[in-house]
Image (cartoon, rainbow, N blue to C red; front, side):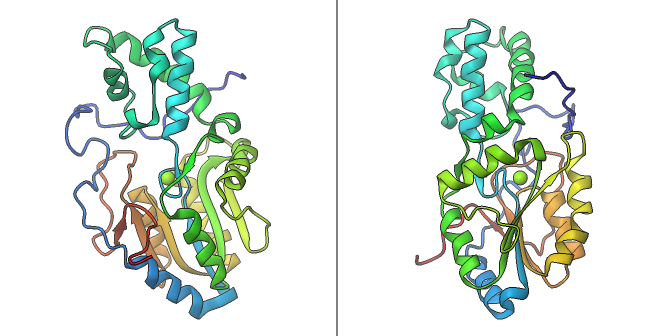
Length: 267
Ligand SMILES: [Mg+2]
């Protein structure tokens, strides 16, 4: 594995502690509005081939907790700590490494030394093609992306993942049943490299997105990203994914509805 410096794009408030409510999302407790999924399909149908629906990947279409659990298991092998070999996706409720370690029986005394070691191991693997293949579709997501395509509108996966993760991402799409990119009706927009900040990329992506068509809707779990789409694409239906986020204390705009998954009411 090549050694590159991995930027910490999402530095957290040092005064907050992981066990405090709201540490991992400022959107906690928001109402959800699953009916927005049908409204998006109606708008996509009206626009047809001119329309474009944008989907983020991590914590929007894909659950990356299986990837995180695998990394912790492998850290257990590397650090010769058999307790970590029992790491499972269900242990991860957000971006905390500390919480899943506690569920594996790691004591208060061990946390301060073990967490940085596992974190380092995690950062060297999480942003790679090899590991992102493990991700699983969020409930209802595969069917919903196909439903969007069936309206005639196009799909753009616009993600903070970098190009080095393209192969693993497409492998994961194919295995999970998502439409795979064909640069015609399905596009995958990624950062050119890992170093670029996701926030900058999502702003920079607005121009190529607008060049592809009229944005019908955008789905993203990161409040700052969905707020950015909301402010820029005035006619788009922006939808916030109430899964987890980078915990920078930013709330989604009050006019942006949230959903937890892509299960449509009555389907
Ligand atoms: Mg995301």
